[in-house]
Length: 282
Image (cartoon, rainbow, N blue to C red; front, side, top):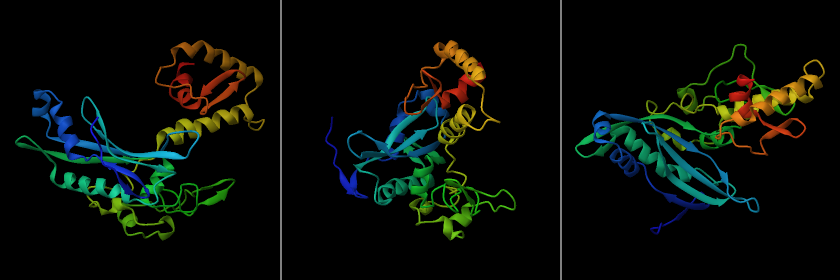
């Protein structure tokens, strides 16, 4: 393994691998036929924090690039390692500068230049608020898609749906709804026609639906108010069906005890797998 030089950015150890060289490597791995057919590629990026050890708060913040070709190619652009999370967004600036260049000019491969498009920046809700420099989704003016203040109910805010004002790339970049912004995101350095700060930061389906709405529905059906709660007989019948389907659950749905809830005693159920497969099969 070759030696890698690290530096300190955002209060953490930082390594930058780059985009262009790895795109060229992805291109060269394709067959000659696919190379000749390829004139442009689309990229998606993922940014998130990963806890490495249970006994410490050391975390890894990778910037991952996905190349939308067949077969799909994925590579790390930068790695940031340290305590908790980065103190600022300086660890993204080198990635954004090279991304800006490759979006404007493409990348060379042999005697050809391959055009590059940006498909989106994919993050879960806390990471998305961090890299965009906005309020968290559960606070006032925290919605990524509309400029409503929201009403505080229980532990979070809910946006009004009447006469709402949708956010746009232009209003976001000009911080017209100042209550939504904490600081200026370095992603705003990318040209408006290359990155839409609203449409190209998609909402996180896994946490919102599979681990959010679906989990809440399951808990409501099992432990909610009497007018919506399932009877013990219904719960037992669902449990029997789930046991019969256990051997048909795809291997890519892990039995993670931290995200599984018990629908009936002794029979754990993953809310994501229930939404994606079990509810349809049963």
